Length: 546
View (cartoon, rainbow, N blue to C red):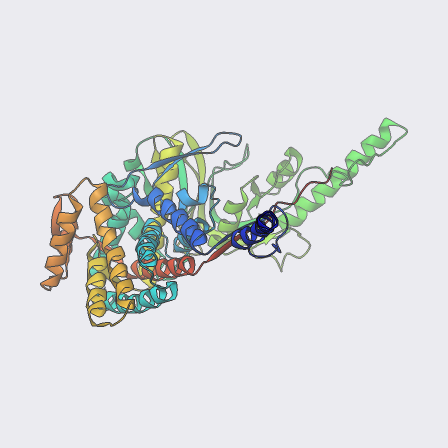
């Protein structure tokens, strides 16, 4: 009887194996993959932490830059240490890493700065969460702890904020300090006073409207970064057409997007057959007459400068010139849109109704030279707050990074003008928040307090990383900071220049309150979203039909 029993046992074994290995039949299409439970959580934690480690070294005044090379045609090279630019340019396959890329993009759109901090902070929260999950703390308990810690940290940050909106001189000083602090971690750090001044002047001209469209940045290779300057009015990167006056006073500008080349027959592959050359002459004459009529309609608007988005052929240019209208062709679309906004005109494409089209106005339009290039400058425009910052520099890579840095500074200043609260920088607000969270954790019973302690540790990692990037002894400095804040000295932060802790008020290191608040909220929400994951399903790519 032993043989049949053995056979029966052998027959029963595969069923048991299949139950353990793969519970029941899979409902997913063949080729789709699914990761469950611990595996899924580990995959998302690891992916998010890898992204955080990638940008970690760019944080702080001594952060390093990254070179991004594209493999597509033209092999573009970007040198940058702006977190959002780095993450936008890399292709990420991990789902959790994509969440972090998105929050850095949102941070960039919302306040312009803090793009690296928000990713590093979320990555550190996940690092703490991973340790807690390994200690068998339920993810929901961790999230609850993080939520409560975030609320307390936000209250502590609000309590630490200062507001100088009433005192204009103090507010201007705050703006200068914020601009300097933002620029000190970028390529412009050596000329930060010069650029902080440019950025403050540009933002103060906006008079609180916060419309960054009014500030135009133009890159012109040549010279050094110090030669960059702010020019009021609007500069268009174009030349006047040949034989037109180089300066126009009291300009009335008609801005258009209309074809001013000969009217081609717009049907693809259409042919016109004629039986003699005279007929060809007739067609050409008709075209000319049509174009002359269009030019006369334009002149009837009473403008003395016509700016077109598209080409202007020689004949219409000559006709317009005879009618006393100067013309500029091929103004790029971004330029045309901005120009319409700044001069108070509208972009038109039909000219039958001279009353309906709104002309732009400005005091003088003249040609200026910057370096080797000729550009057209519009002074005394209808919108007085418009201005142009001309960036000079050694190469296009330097200029590209300078523009990104200055754009960050402008965004932060605009945010500060809208919400005038400021906090001290240099890791000081993080220490204040982590102290508040630790005090809450000490009073909280249950496992949530472990999550709160983790949250406080993650906050302290920001000053730690700033120290590490500067090659300082991070654990020594951060523990000194903790002791200072414990004694109630709430202005202490990391002073990179001396390599010790310092008073942030005296160092003049100030940051925008909204940036810090956004980092705190976005980082916590992103980490929370990734901690909740327990299953990753990858769909099968669609097969090409043979």
